[in-house]
Image 1 (cartoon, rainbow over the protein chains, first blue to last red):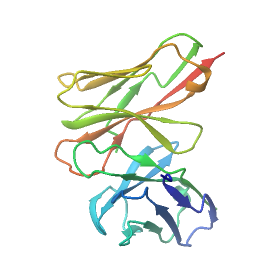
Image 2 (cartoon, rainbow over the protein chains, first blue to last red; image 1 turned 135 degrees about the vertical axis):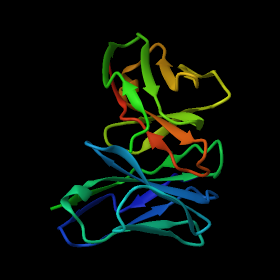
Image 3 (tube, helix red, strand yellow; image 1 turned 90 degrees about the vertical axis):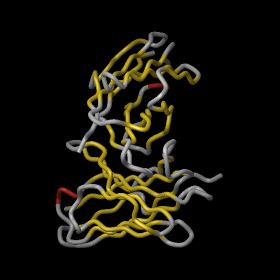
Amino acid sequence: KAGVTQTPRYLIKTRGQQVTLSCSPISGHRSVSWYQQTPGQGLQFLFEYFSETQRNKGNFPGRFSGRQFSNSRSEMNVSTLELGDSALYLCASSPRVERDNEQFFGPGTRLTVL
Amino acid sequence: SQQGEEDPQALSIQEGENATMNCSYKTSINNLQWYRQNSGRGLVHLILIRSNEREKHSGRLRVTLDTSKKSSSLLITASRAADTASYFCATAEEHNQGGKLIFGQGTELSVKP
């Protein structure tokens, strides 16, 4: 099976712009989660989608949003970018949504905000 | 917010030696997982241990879990240069169904040939 794919891999934006990141989960996986990784804050959970519904949400401002499509592909959007949004954004899919929920991660999208 | 604290933050050993990393967490959990990350890339799942398990093995990996102390350890035996990476523990909280994981800050392991 193909792994989790994320596009684009690298992105440079300026403050105030908005960005959309895309994630295609492993075939058959219906749960998709997003994480932000920065040197200062580490890995932080953004949100999780299952069957096109947001199941969990982390402590991020409303500028961060996401959605999931009927084919389980997911997008996340960040509006009004700030310098602090520079990070590696990781998407993960899981075949299960309860208990043994091991995550399969994509390679990430490296976002730089100038 | 980070749930886990990992110790040590960095570890440097020689090939063939064992590496032990520790993780502590704060809340009740369904399971605890360990992941590896090579140089700013995606994370790779290593092993999952459920809250009712105390020890688990997978190849050269041994994980222990002490829910009374809210701590876990990952032992990598007979380390290789290819084991050089950052290692993260992650917890699935008991009250939280679904895919949300809370990660520790990670341990940077360097294995010198």
